[in-house]
Image 1: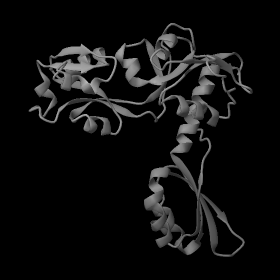
Image 2: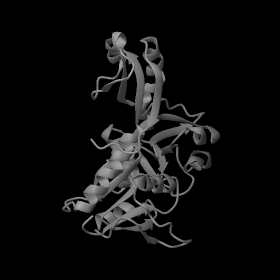
Image 3: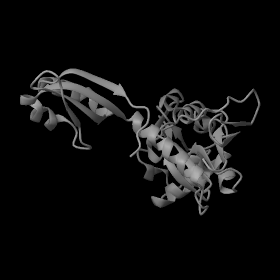
Image 4: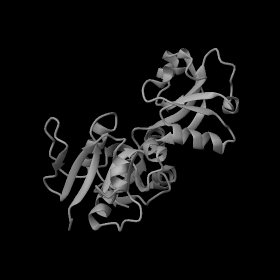
Length: 285
């Protein structure tokens, strides 16, 4: 990299560890910060790291304090920060859902019209509801939103949901999803992208693509080659290598990781043998 890049990482919370692991997986070697240290560098790259609350990352990026950073998409949308989403990172997935108590008569989002809704995402909630023609009184709560209906503070809540277990524990049921969120890499909108930022974005993307792929190797008789190739995913082109044994070839192919479970039995049924699957570290398109 030709110039130093300043990157913000979440200092705590559910995005911290996967963000750190993703950065390391690119081949960058970040120096682990000491306790309460808010800045660090990387051993083998011109990257300065700043550790912030995920809530603060988009504002620092917007104001040009850092070149890019990792945060939640819901945090970007809540305050409508003037940043570009450079990359969706695929972890920290959750959804903003509306929920009511089990005893409530509401069955759809439309039933929330004219009611009081407690949330820690007041701006995003108001925009999303109004987009569906729903007008509600928004009660802003920064703590445990789930308790609001029980305390009489609101008729319903809008909160981030990962598994739904917290809703069930608090006697709530979901009326539907308003917004899907995940961790994202953001950069300042309108800023001229530096070579360093482009390289980092490319490397992070290569790790994410690799995580969703598997490298597949197998031996196949030439008489069964067409049947095996017909089973393999159409994307990309497999490599076919003749082996020392006459009439036998090796096939190397890159396949989606999600297909492996159903693909292996089909390949075996077509005559493929010595089937091997390997993880992929990085995949540049």
